[in-house]
Image (cartoon, rainbow, N blue to C red; front, side):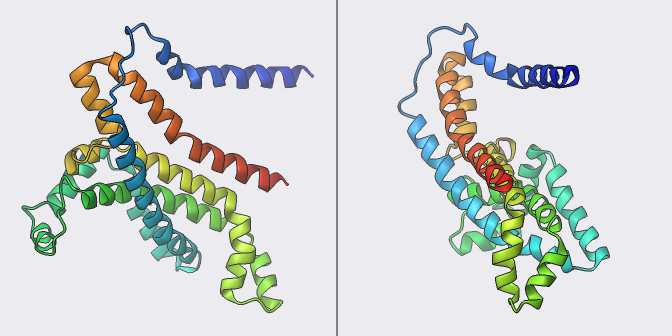
Amino acid sequence: MRARWGQTLALAGVSVVLLTPLFGLMAPVGAWRWSASSTPSALATSFTLTGLALVIVVLAGTPLAWSLRTAPKPVRTAFEAVVLLSVLMPPLALGLLLMLAFGPQSALGVLLLRLGIPTSNSTPAFVATQVYASFGYYLLAASAAFNAVPRELEHSAALLGLGPWAVFRRVTLPLARLGLATAVSLAWVRALGEFGAIMVTSYYPHGMPVQLWVDLQDRGLSAVLPLLVVFLLTALPLPWILHLLSNRAHRA
């Protein structure tokens, strides 16, 4: 009984520490000022383009993560090291390197411009940067989710006459759903909250993180807090709900 109370108190204490940043919303910064002109545009930009980036990440990353299970170990290890490098790269460094590699001063950037694809301060640049920033997070988490599925169950399903696609759809995917939900959540939060790289490659159009920075510089904290509340209320529910639903289904 005492051990349970001690565990509960420890978890409560850690929860309070983790929630402490939210207390900043009650800071005395004066009357909040709502920016009715910039907020809808920033919201639309962030959620429309982040949604597009997330679709690209999931469609490209899911089959790749699944295929890694059967790749030779040296190949898989080397590839995962490359993916991890992209995850560990500081956001500002990532933005600068993307600009150098794809910007209008590079040969690749010139080629893309000739094809009508601007690589800076444009919708393609915004989406591409978010894909680069979030792809590694999704791939590593999705790969871990697939690796956690017992191979014996897949082999048994195949012996019962199911083809590879049927085994994936009816056995592998349901068993990996909790890990895949976590992977989607990580990719969503990483892409939606990207600031450093986006500032370099696609300052325009403004997404929510850049708009928060602009409002902070131009109008102060009293103008930032309303937009920050909107950002939190719109960014957090998707990964939160995904995790809760997947966890509930897993327990059932």
